Image (cartoon, rainbow, N blue to C red; front, top):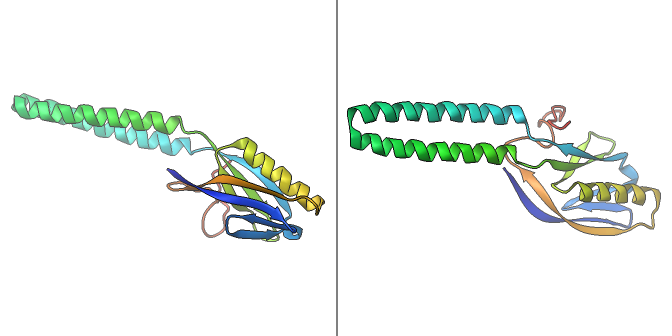
Length: 167
């Protein structure tokens, strides 16, 4: 699940500003726009778990229905609702669009500065930053929906940031 917030991306007076982060352009070594795809393996595992949960509810409904017809109807209705919910979740997960990251490398390690669902916006911003590095007269300002991701990692682990899930 990703939450978005509108942030400003600005280059002015040789300073790159992304939200509340500031990068002097002379210290930016590389800027890249990369695609981040959701981890399909984790999605498949979650769907398989949901399938077995739904299967267990259907077996329970059949057993309760054999013992008591009224209670079996209630459990059967619950099984239908859970099945529809699991199918909705599965379709929603597999239709999720990829995100695009703006990765900035300075003297330290690469840092994901911006995450957006629009490839053209991220590519344009990366190009403008590189143009501003080469030409001090370049200035720009753009507002972008920046996504804060919950449930997966955009920027590697907290220790070494070497386990990126991007391709």
